[in-house]
Image 1: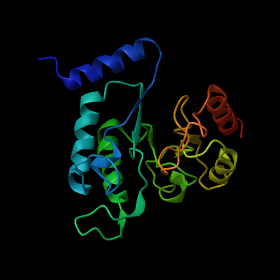
Image 2: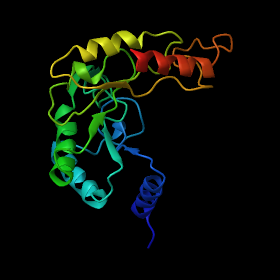
Image 3: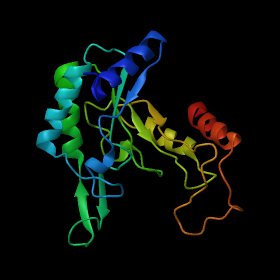
Image 4: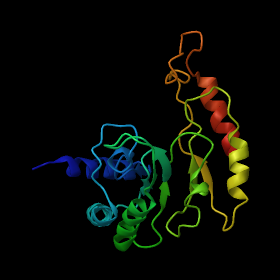
Length: 207
């Protein structure tokens, strides 16, 4: 029957016919990280590699895929999201590394893989820059403030060796409330505008 994965392939095929690349996230971060999200956490170092191989095998003939792991989560962090409710340090890099290894084992070492980190000034360059599978650093200037300085984050990333390209993976969205999570949001703080979005992107790209 025509199932979920058939539909995924249909979308990727239609995109290729129109000259479009797909940024494909094999999983969202709440399936790995002890952080926000509905979960459940289902991936570890062992099954993440198996899953990476599985999905790459299904999609290996599609050349318009840019693989994006990470799912809006940092690779290392502190969190109280555990049964004990106490703050612990977590390091999920082994799981993400395994998923990348599974993808490369099928699609080859030249396949494009990057990582979508959580919002803020810390990019992938702070915790996985030296990973051989990481083809592009990324950061997320996000939705927490109207004014941020992504040009400085680009300069920081491009100064590292070996040099890798870097990109603002998730700038602000038009009509998204500015920092709605602090409990102080009002309509006076407002929403991001088309100008905000364009300015954010231009400042990152031109730098």
